Picture (cartoon, rainbow, N blue to C red):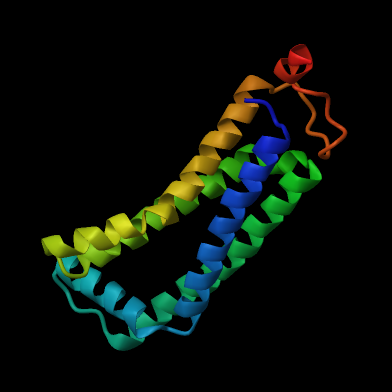
Length: 170
């Protein structure tokens, strides 16, 4: 897959989705939303058999919230870089960050299940599939662009050469 207008648009759509998901969840975490506190304490209690205090849960959820907000800014910056044709958007650090987002999205979706440990919450995990599948799709997109054209300098849209398939079709 070459870096083209289509891959840039896909990157922008997927990356914006990831950034907004992290921003939304980050703000709710920074505000210590009750639902997030219940997920943290419930998962801790059910998985580790202990009991987490409310103050500890608030501190953890607040910290995670602020980290998510910071990451949302980084993801928005990577989207901007992709649109501007900057190499950083297709770099190894970008892949690692979106890989982390996929992992974290899955873990937080799974917390809906682990906080209760009964079968009906599995649908909450499925419903939150986009939280981990969007960043996973970005990792794949970046990987494909890097694999297929590692020697190509990423240029701003409109200045890159046409893809060979398009040029041959005309």
